[in-house]
Amino acid sequence: MSSLTVVTDSGERAPLLCISSPELSHSNPRDGEIVSSSLDEIAVSKPTLSDPKQRLVSLDVFRGLTIALMILVDDAGKAFPSINHSPWFGVTLADFVMPFFLFIVGVSASLVFKKVSCKPQATKKVLLRTVKLFILGVVLQGGYFHGRNNLSYGVDIAKIRWMGVLQRISIGYLFASILEIWFANDYPVDSSKAFMRRYFFQALAGILIGLSYLILVYGLYVPDWFFEISSLNMESRSPVSGYGLSTQTVNCGVRGSLEPPCNVVGLIDRLLLGEKHLYQHPVYRRTKECSVNSPDYGPPPSNAPGWCLAPFDPEGILSSLMAAITCLVGLHFGHILVHVKDHLQRIIFWSVFSVFLTLAGYVLGLAGVPLSKPLYTLSYMFITAGVSGLLLVVLYYIVDVKCFQKPMILFQWMGMNALILYALAACDLFSGALQGFYWDSPENNLVDITERFIQAAFNSKKWGTLVFVMLEILFWGLVAGFLHAKKVYIKL
Image (tube, rainbow, N blue to C red; front, top):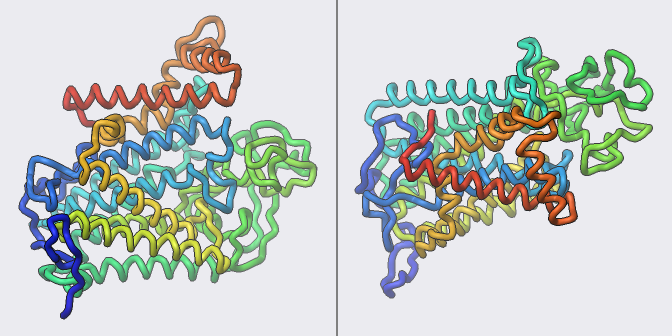
């Protein structure tokens, strides 16, 4: 079989697919162990990976950058609605956070499980870590903690939210890890054909999940349904006619709808999880139909439909299964990292694959498959996975190839302790705890006073909020650096 060649930096001609043996010459973690904080140690040298004492720093940086991005869009999104999650259709900066996390999980799984001697033991550890991650997600986002500006805590078990960010990540992690442990053939990879044979069943699994999603979304019938209006999904009494009723009926009776009230993703969550266990403040409340301040939250217009107050979980069951395909894309990128030895060859393969995914998503959008993060549509999955791959290419070239690491050190530290930063910063545990100490009234606390001071200094609530959030990211970067200096890494 003929092979494509490239000219390396030394001027020599080399195969475009330069395959290494299945086991790289570097140390492996214990079978089944997931090193989520310090990540998977792999060698990084020029032009190949051969030094066991170094690792892929760009993946740590990528994870830390994603944590910083999450803090930015969560805390500055109210001041800058354009970077907040898209109300329903479309993609904004915030809509890339979840795919970035899932992509990184896939890359990591391919590195950790590149060599597994005891598959049952590795599977046991994966299942245990999945359960722990899912439970932690329920604790953090199930409603027990009420977030910043709310000093109360506790949740009614009958209304606890079962799905969330960490829960979706745990599903993707389980999917990627099981595929890597059990469905990667033992064929030696010495050619592009052998590469495809080794990972054929993983690709097939991704295709089957995608097809199942499409069949369900476009084939299932969504009947009329109703929901109860409570204090959870109604912050204040709306002037809209009919909102004073205890229940609202949503008229559907359709197939293939991707609109907020009548899609199959919401139907499955209502049937399997129950209406009361879904997210009660969905993003479609910022649509033009539901908010006079769209794309920001605001009072509903006089002709707002009843479904504007309906619950919907953006990390629901069906959309999470579709999101797991993003982990599979990350797996594929990790396979290239494991088997392809030359920096240039990796960058070429990653770039081609990333551009293909991005263009595929764009074409699907033109063909009528809208971009929607709440539904995790096929077009959204392709575009966000492609952008994830392109960002990894850029970070890999800057950090691991050119060794331009000092400017990225804060993100590297944050990536090595991503879990604790997510809990303390993104879930507002730290700010909520600080707000428990106040002078005279709850709004006179260290967090709010600092933010108001910065807003006054800049004579702008909008730009003052942005500066406050940037300082917040810097603070957490330094906290992560302190933990790194003490060699403290929080992981499950």
